[in-house]
Structures are given as structure tokens and as C-alpha cells.
Length: 215
Image (cartoon, rainbow, N blue to C red; front, side, top):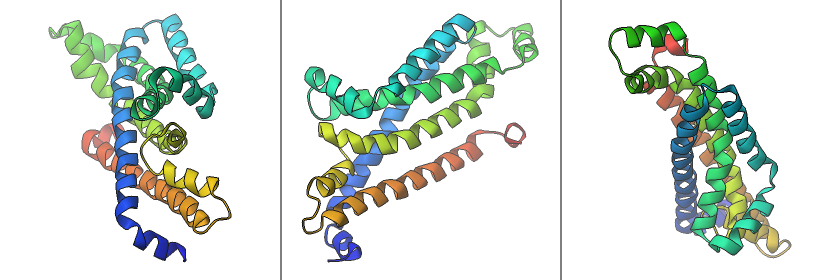
């Protein structure tokens, strides 16, 4: 059986796995974005706080995926909980770092002008600074999403949802019938879905960032 026939015969199952894969990555990226922006807002005015937050988020990326999953499984068990926690932790660094960079790059004169017309500190943050930092934050989310597409494959080790199960089954049963088709289908599916999500980010950027800021 060739690859095309394998995909055609199992399209319903593969489509569901692809949907679950994308869903897990998108939801974890959103959770990480909320946490990352909150952390960035809390520390961006403090060089020490920014350095500590960035260093802690960077430390997580130094832990191999299998090792982190191995540490989480005894506590949270196999399945969705462990997968979500691992993906959120891995997504934090680019979002936290870009939030700090984006907010730190806002011209102080703009913030002063906003306060000068009567805006509260919270109003300046939400209506001026975060809007100006949004392109950098969105870029952090884009990078995080691409990272998680690959890491979510490894999360199949913890019985996580998505195309990783297809890849793992193919590698585990190497040499058997359709093992190569399984591995290739899972891998190519992840690549295609990653490209689709990246195109979505390009569209979001065009819709939410003014042409002057993009330019």
C-alpha cells in the first residue's frame, strides 16, 4: 500500500488526529500568551525582574521534552493534563521575551502624552502600550506555535492527542506493514498544519496591525 492509499483509507481518523493536534497547540498557545503577557507586564519596567523572568522561561527550554514529560507523568498522569502543562511551559519563553521587548520599546513620550490627556496608568497600559507592543507579542506567539507543533508530537509519549501517535506507532513498529506510511503521514501532517497555522498568523497580523506599524 502506498502513502496516498494509506491516507485515503484512514482519512477520517487522520483528520480527527490533525484537528486534535491543532486544537491542543492553539489552546496551549493562548494559555501561554495570557500567562506570558501578564508576566511581561509585571516585570518589563525592572531590568532585574525581566532578566529573572526570561532566565526562568529559558531554563524550561533546556529540559528535554521526554525528561519534562517524565517528570510530569507521575504527578498529573497520562493524557491531556500532562500534555497541556508541558506545551504551555515550552511556549512561555518567546511570548514573555517578546512582551518585555515590545513594552520596553514603546516610546516614553507616547506614554507621557497619554497620561497628559488624563489616561490612568491602566488605561495607558491597555490602550497604548500593549497595542504598540502587539506586533512583538504576536511574533512571540507565532514562534511558540511553530515550536509546539513539533513538541506536541513528542507529547504522544504521554498519551497526548494529535498526530504524534501516528508517528510513534510507525517508529515503534518499524519494519512492519505500513510502519513507514504511519511515520510519514504523521510527520507530513504536522508540517502541513504548521504551514497553515503560520499563514493564519500572517492574516492576523494584517488584520490587527496597522500598515504604518508593519512598515
